[in-house]
Amino acid sequence: MAKGLFVGAAALLAVLCVAEALKLPPYIKPCRRNDPKLDECGLKNGKEAVARFVNGDRKYKIPNLSPLTLYNFKVDSGSRTVGINLNFKEAQIHGLGGVDIRATRFDLTKKRIEFDLVWDVFYVLGDYEINGRVLVLPIQGHGPANITVTNLVVTFGFDYELVPKKKTGKDHVSLTTSNVKFEIGRAYFDLKNLFNGDRLLGENMNVFLNENWKEVTNELGPSLADAIGEVIRQIIQQIVDVVPYDNIFPVD
Ligand SMILES: *[C@@H]1O[C@H](CO)[C@@H](O)[C@H](O)[C@H]1NC(C)=O
Image (tube, rainbow, N blue to C red; front, side):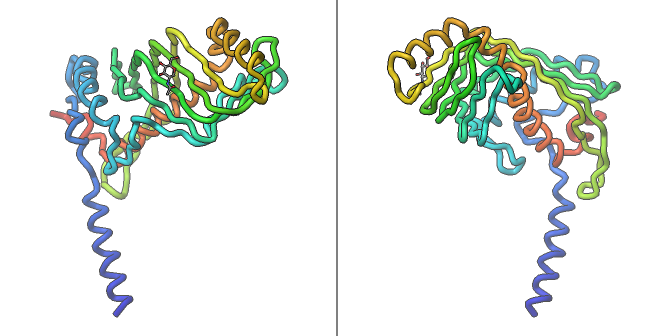
């Protein structure tokens, strides 16, 4: 009896799964794959879409992006002997919802897509732990942090393959390589409780970080780019995992 119920439930689940070939979320309008102005279509529809899905969408496993919580968020200068190690056990990124898409570039023949994303301002808040050297000065501490970034422009590009999925019986986009470039207008650092709470040292270090924000963000650049890229990559992969290629770029 119980077994029969289980089999029945499994069969029902299987049917539901087959039906899981989702359309795009209603707020993302598809672009025809033969549209001669595909880039313009992508830009227009993309602008409308991002404003909506920053609140998250369970159906597509998109987390709430306002704020976005990152666990074990690490940025470092990549060098073990000199440089900065900055870790957050839990970082909250506020302001991602203010994203705007400035441009999109689709090359469906080469299977490559790029977006330029722009943020006026966002904040990284959370308890930090820092160690190492910034430029030549030793830095060490842990406590609440507020890192504010203004005028961030991120270019995210990825190559993909089309892979058939049993679950939907259709081809899906599968991201292969992706890359991220970014430029920052300015970064502001506010690290509380540096040097075990030594006020003078801590205040001086914050002044130093802010005067040298460019060098500091350059040092953290590659690992910051990886972190940004990973978030964008995961969001895109979540959607294309459930939405077949034909529904994203219909023939007509
Ligand atoms: C973070 O710092 C910025 C400016 O540097 C400030 O405008 C903002 O209110 C701060 N946020 C918090 C939560 O302290």
